[in-house]
Length: 189
Image 1 (cartoon, rainbow, N blue to C red):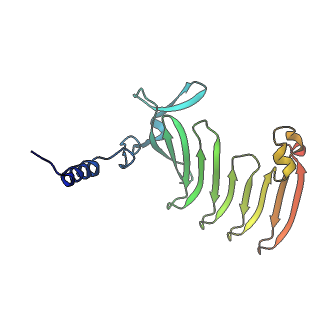
Image 2 (image 1 turned 30 degrees about the vertical axis):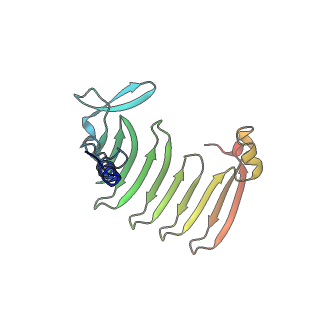
Image 3 (image 1 turned 90 degrees about the vertical axis):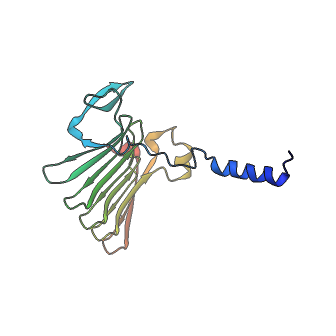
C-alpha cells in the first residue's frame, strides 16, 4: 500500500491541530474561585511568613475571603498559597474605597484610595515616599517621590541620607503651585 505525500501532510495537519499545549488552554482551578468568611481562616508561621489556612485543612489557603466592617464597608482578601495578594475594600453599595496589592513576600506594590464619587484620592507605589494625592474633583493635588536626579540614581544605595525627595503641589483649579526639595535624612517618619 502506498501513501502519497498529500495524505501524510494531511495526517500531520490533523494531528497537530488536534493537539494543544497547556499554554493554549486556560487552566481553571476551583480553588482560586473559593470564597469563605475571613473568620474561618487561621494563621500559621512558616519560614518567616504568617500564612493563612482554612480551619480543618492542611494546605495554605488559595481563594478569597470576605468580611464586613461595622461601617458597612466590605473587604475582600485574595490569597495564593496562604499569601495575601490583594485587599479590596468597597463602600456600601459596591463603590470602590481602597485597593492594596502585594507580592508573595508581603511587600506592598500599590495602594489606591477612592472618594465616594469614584475619583482617586491617594495612590502610593512601592510604599517608599512615591505617592500622588488628588482633589475630590479628580485633579492632582500633590505628587511625591525620591531619587529623580542623575546623582540620586547613580548613588541610590551609596548614601541614602542624601537622596533628594520631591513634593510637587497643585492648586484645586489645576494650576501648578510649588515644589519642595529636601534630603531623605531630614524626614522623620
